[in-house]
Length: 319
Image 1: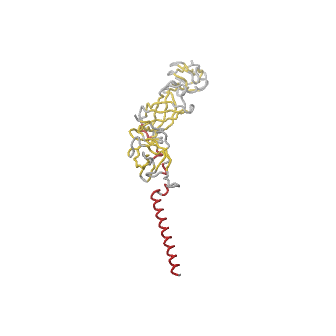
Image 2: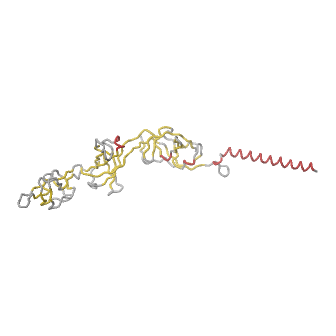
Image 3: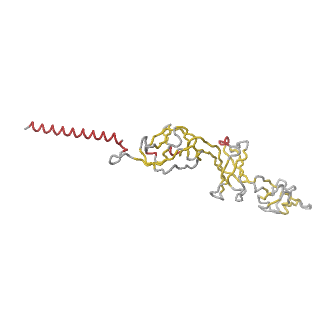
């Protein structure tokens, strides 16, 4: 009787061991096939949804943002030839005058004496761009009665920080924005660069001229300037967000023809706004993951929802 019980126990133990071994074998095979976290319910491989863009050679143009003032290209203050009181004014703010036109008269008489009125002549033709002094104001030969400027030919005066002076040269293009006209761009060109750096402000003064006259632009307006400086060409440019930094390396994911991605280590060049140059590690025409790369690993399978190559803002495709 005892031997029968012992035999039964041994049989149960053998069956339990066999079942455990079978379970371990199945788990091992499942792990090798699905890769753990890459398995979906039912044993299907995980597919990551991404968006890609074709790598293209592009030109990146760097720029400097600064502020400036719209001024007359030529303007001059008007001074009397004799001191006295202003006896008469022939102009107001905005009046147009011709050269040598009488714009005011000054009475140089003093108590007990009488002198003829002294005319004040316009030294240049143009428009009155500052309010003239009022009649009765005491003036001297060093007192400016008003200012005359050529409002048909305007310029922008701006200060550029010292760190950018190596890139400054006549002929650079700029976009001018005025608060009075939101969203409107007035093209301009850098015409003159000061030969010295101001020691107090560590800036250099530059003069820009509008590419065409526009009646909407007035002297005295505040201008926001986007001055284009250096052009970087001959390299592929991709969105900066597509590049992942790890330690001292930078990499991105390239979409393969079989629906998988390859992690690619790349070398970076110049960056402008949201684009960065790729100087090594990527060929033109390859598709780069630009959205959804944070969950990817080398060899992962993806569903690329891009319908067509997208044009990225900030770069112009080279021919």
